[in-house]
Figure 1 (cartoon, rainbow, N blue to C red):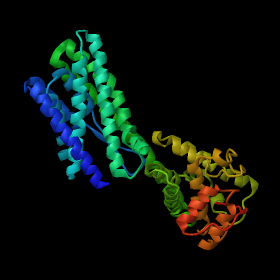
Figure 2 (figure 1 turned 60 degrees about the vertical axis):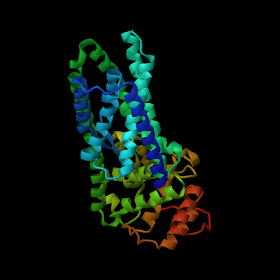
Figure 3 (figure 1 turned 180 degrees about the vertical axis):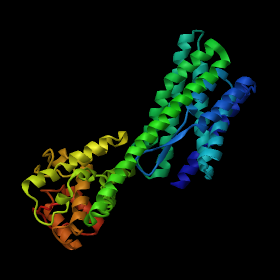
Figure 4 (figure 1 turned 135 degrees about the horizontal axis):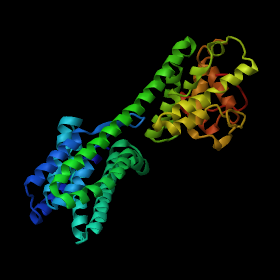
Length: 419
């Protein structure tokens, strides 16, 4: 796939060179004060960008580059706009992202340059004498910029990520597209300000952009701090009990492998892994004497234990990026036959990630020492898992589990295990 991305990046770069050449021949760059101001604020908009986590093994960098690039395209209407966009990308690559891959530079320069070119041509072709109409055209140009950017990013992920085109679209566009969409109204307002007060509007626009970026950065850091606290709570919970030390991490790794065996996308597999890591965090509020009781729990004590999925859900819902994972955690003690808790869901009513977490949790519990019993052997645990297929556990997920473990399905029946 590396060769495919190289060919893709090279092709885009050839289009970029052709576009900037055609634009320069028809509308040569002009290097006046407007160019210098846009260039300065273009570089500065990259400098105030920030990284956001996607709750998987990746980050997305959010900048205000779209605003500056589209505004430069509709205001300057010449090759200067593409040069400004190009300079901003190169600056970010050299000093902020610090990528050493030539293909990444080729792709990023081409992606932003071509998006700026198409936005400029769209506006230039359709502009009128009406300020209000032109403001709507600026929104259109911004939308075209955003759409072309998303298409190019989608194919970049497709050629590098070993995932399908629809998954590539989701991975490439979710956070950046949302951020860009929120920028569109500001692009239109910025254009209106420029038309009303001239070049002096640009510093004001940048001040507004900076305030938005700083607010977003602090909000992102706040959300990340809540996620870090949840992870710390899960770790402290396991430190309270030597029997469950490392349980969540081992279960999470197994859940990830099962999800992969089921053919789920890399991003979804990572999200399931994250949810499984935090699936028992609600036990932080369960008394130690119940968690560590060496004999059978009383009915009232078991009712207390049964509250932990909903408590875990409440904690995960406090993190904006974990709302879906919170649902999966809530249902990881549901049973295929509908006799589980907290909601008595059955079969396909139970979210697939919950069914995956359930089997990983049970297997890890079976093969670990507990206060009330010694660990089962791998073979014994697998046999019990097979007996749960079709009653406690989803048969399809059991089959995937057995593939991961390296065993063949050999039985069916009923079994029950406290975990």
